[in-house]
Image 1 (cartoon, each protein chain N blue to C red):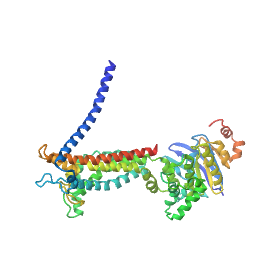
Image 2: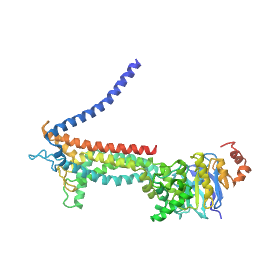
Image 3: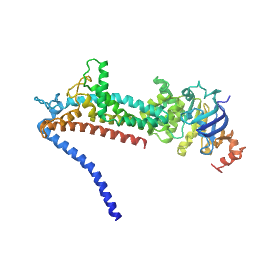
Length: 250
Length: 292
């Protein structure tokens, strides 16, 4: 069964139609890359999966978005529960102005978990998963803002993992990072794939080609093509995809 | 010709700027020199430790403590009223209210700040006090509680407006991070937004305190004129500001020791607000560094 599924989705910002009749299926434990020129709707589309667009006053959507076969825009869905299941990593590292430790346990604290053993274990486990443990294990009480940009982003990934989601949405997670940090994040994505379903928005073609199993090309609010990454980059069916991945526009 | 005109404008502007500086210097000079005269008659130690303030009586005592207690009490009550209400409104406006609503309410709140304080004073005396007397039998007609509550209402717009600005300045990305992990709006407001905006909120409270300490009309009308070293909010007290009003509008001879007491009291007030404003300046500076 598909992990995520969207059927005939339209999105409007006021009178502006920004997503035009998109359907897509995403398999569990895979990495899917969303690519396309700026303003093509890929970030908006990504944010449909954890209902992050809900806070925009003029946002309106039609169609169906499902996780594990359940419609997430159903009235009975509690959006807080949904977001525990579907984590998100943002373009710019956005750690809270708190300690490294408090950043990681934030998601547990808001669920009311107080047991120090559980919190400690989660911190160690999540930081290890995010390949940050060795660098920060002796300064967990220090402010997260003192970390480098790349470390901050891995901290944000660790913070997301601490809530134990099954899906992780990443909105250009490496675009604000230097090449070395960026490579570390990519490596991390590659490893996380075994346990999570990952959807990543990226402007970086090489990155999409390196980390993803399938790639979806968006253009002007439409999904032009979604296929195995290898095919998208070597032998796309659509001419616009071909032009974009070969760098002829975008 | 245009050059002369330009020059004239420059001189005019400099003169205008100089007026404010000279006024400040003048005020401080008068305050210091008169206070100095005062302390050549009264020892600083008795000024700071005597528990009675009776400069206008035959048995003269010059202990500032009763006036400080009165000021402290009314200010404390004001902040206890203004902080929870002001912060709640700020959180509501920033985290819950639709943008259109916020656009209407914020200017309205600032109108509340434009009500003359004498109106607030009468509101305290004529509305709040009778109302509270129904609830608390034996409460005096002049008391710190009514004046403090109304002063709190007066400060609400200040706290709301500044706290709201501080919350608004917290990057959207922090709010998204919190929502993204399954926080409710309430959790996001109290666990992420308020802590992140804490320095700005602290500044708003300090400026609120500063405002309450210097507030004159409300306490002069509603809190009484009886210097008393007490923290009982139900009896008449006197604040530093009220005392200054009382003496300056009375018939005390210029140049007398009684007359100089108002400068000593004014000096005490000046020191308080000066310290508070400096703390807020310092906090604000730290706050700005954080987001640079």
